[in-house]
Structures are given as structure tokens and as C-alpha cells.
Length: 565
Image (cartoon, rainbow, N blue to C red):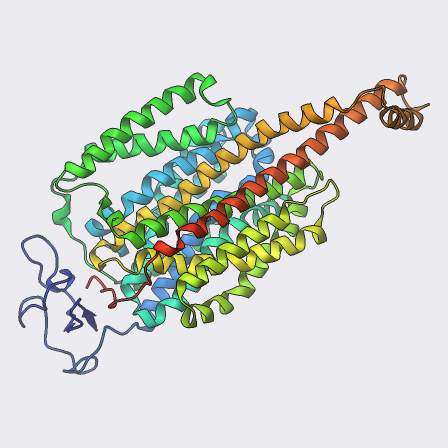
């Protein structure tokens, strides 16, 4: 097989290419002319080379290995949301408090956010094959540990390890898709990755609710075991996209790693716990906010001055990557925000169980699946900037349609907004991947992929923090406004109370008090409905505002990215 360099000159690949003094194979040195025969290049094989040989063909083995990696990525993203609809059952099973159980989610997210940008450096040191195999095996083992844990403390520890180890699988798939496949095949690959990355959080609550209702909450984690074993075995056997570079271990920036972990971990804690704990009124939130600020200064100073930084930020000098990462942040707000808000509305206002909520939420996933081939075809014919603008408009419209909730909104009332949102996700995800990563030189792909995926997760985390803050503030505002209108001197209010009291007459000791409580609950319910509508309108505004950046985006193009062979 052959690898392609930036001057489009093929060089044949040997089973074990010689390494240079820096630990890299000659064929992995990108943006340089091909080396002379005998150093880093072998004579072309009769089966797969020749003077006119093109880029390294993607074999069936490559496809199977890559598909195994995509399954691993699906598992890692799915586990962010799969427990969200079953936290009450886990809380009962572990005898945890309401404050403690939220850490089953928070610990996973904090650890994953730390690993995602680190994965680029680890992939270069260990190779994609070794890193992904370790991540898949570790994710599987920690899933078993989560299933059989007996206390909330150990569950939090195992969830943190699961998120940290599994987080390496997400950006590695994105980087591999650009380094392994030639440009003409990337549209179809992007469709598949986009479908997986957006379907996983959408299906999470549905699958989690079904597993918990049908079996028990332990199966939320045991469901990972067989796929995890298969992914680990197949990736180790089939994947061969680059070679390790052990020389990068020299001068490994442990200080930068510590600063990055402190910065991202503390930031994730603050945005997760802040809305629940009244932000800086809580001592721990205030302390971690200071830690995040101080470590952020130290982290950025370190990566900009150290010779071998843990994360390379120069990718942000590429305008398309910087804007694409910002769009990834916006998509994270919508993707995770919508999956959070709608189940919350259906549970709090409509009183539905996890399985009923999952059934309604499935509409979005179904339309994502149906839109995948359409989005793939459009990506080959349309300017990707136009396609992304269409996706942002459609997502904003879907969320705006969703912002007309009533206390009776159910499956059919939510069908159209979910269908529009489901159609739009693939129109957003496919072009933004290519816009962000498609103009970068190949040697920056692994590192940039981690930063790109980090932005989506940070968008989700910060978006959820903003949503929870809006929910608290606007609920209080609407309660006060509606309460001001509940004046007993108003005939309509008095008639309503009299009608309610008549219904309770003979059923309770004090019909008038029962009527007042019922009216108060009605006011609270309507205040919640108005609050959810406010949040959805704000989210729609974010997507429409994202269109303002579109004139700054360059059209992706250029020569194929090289595989690190």
C-alpha cells in the first residue's frame, strides 16, 4: 500500500519502515519530498504500486477497523446520556442523596473533557491502534466495575475512570477519518460519523429508559461489555493507520498536563454545579472557579512557551478551524441542550416515565437517520458553507417551533419540531467537520481533532449551565408575574377557586384549602411551561446568530490529507 505526501508523490509502504533519529518514520514526515529509495521507502510492490500508483487505497481491512472505531466512539458518546433518564433508579440502588447522584454524570463529563484534548499527543506517542485498543478495553472494564459497584463513592470513581479512558475514542475517530480516506470518500465517511455522534446522545435517554424498565439500571453499563470486547479485538487486529513515535515521550509536559486537568476539570465542575448551587454563593463552586481561572492562565502560558506542549494551539491560527470550532461549540449547545430540555419538560410538566419520554424523543433520531443519505448527497453537490447555513437555519427553526409548548404538548405536538431538528443535525454536522479540519495540514489533524471535539463538549456543558440558570431565573420571574394576577378580588380567580372547591367538597376536610393548593400547582406548572419556552427561544437565537460568521468561512479544499504511514 502507499501513502501520499503533500506533493502528491506516492511512496510505497513497507511492513516496518525505518525510523529516523526523532523516532518518526520517513513516510510520516509530511510536507516534505519523498525520501530516496532505501530510506523510509521500499520499492513498489507488484500488487499495489508502480510508477503511476495513486494514494494508498483503502482496503476492506481498513474499513472494518475504522467501523470498529466508530462503534467505540458511539459507546463513549452514548454513555454521556444513557444514565440521564435512570438517575432516580441508580440513586435508589446505591442509597445516594439527590446531591450525590448528580456526580454520576458530572464525574464522567469532567474526566472526558480532560482526556479529549490529550488524546492527540497520546495517539502520536502510542499510535492510533494502541491508544484506541487501550481506551476500548479500559472503557469495557470500567463499565463492568460501574455495574457491580455497591456505593455512590465507588460509582463516582469508576464513572470518572470510564469517562477519562473512553474520551480518547471520540477525537481519534475524527482524525483517522481525515488521514485514512481520500477527499472523494470523506463525504460518505462524514455522514456515518455525524450520524453516530448526533444519534448517540439522542438515543441515550431512550435506550437507558428501556434497559432500566425492562431489566435494571445495572444493564446501562453491562450493555457495553460485548460490544467493548468486540471493538477491542477488532481494532487491535485490523487498524493500521500510523506508527508510534516514542521519541515524543522525552520532554513530555507533565506540568502542562496538570494545569490542563485543573483548568478543564474545574471549569466543568463550575458549569455543572453552579446552577444547582446558586453559583458563587456556594463555597466549593467559588473555590473551583478560582482554581479554573488561575490554572487557565498557567495552562495557556505553558502551551505557548514550552517546546513540546501537551496541546498545540497553533491550529486556531487557521481561520476555518477557529470558526469551525466555534460552530462545533454552538452545535454542542443545541445537541445536548435539546436532549436535556425536552425530557425535562415531559417529566416535570407532563409527568411521563423514562420509556414514554424515550418514545417521543425517538422521532429526532429517526429523522436524523432518514436525513443521512440526503445530507451525504448534498455534501457532494453543494458548497459546504451553504449546506451549513441551511443546517443552522433549520435547527434554529426546529427549536423555535418547539418554543410554543403548552401543558398538553405531547407526541404529535412535538413531532414537527423534532422532525425539523433531526433533519437539520446532519446538515450541520457533515459540513462543519470538513470546514474545521479540511484546511489543516495533515500533521496537525490529531491534535486539532481533540480541540475540535473538546469545543463541542464545552458547548454542551456551558449551554446546560446557561439553560439551568435561565430555568431558575425565569421560573421565579414567571411565578411572580402570574402570582400578581391571582388577586382574590378578581371575579375570574374567585370563580376558579369556587369551582375547584366544589370538586373537592365531600372528598377532603377543607375543600377551600385543597382548591388553593391546586391553583398554586397550576400556576407553578404554567410558569414552568413559559420558562421552557424562554430557554428554547434563546437556543434558537444562538443558532440564527451563528449565521453572522458565515461570510468569514473559506471554502474547504486543497490536497488530500496524508495517512501517517
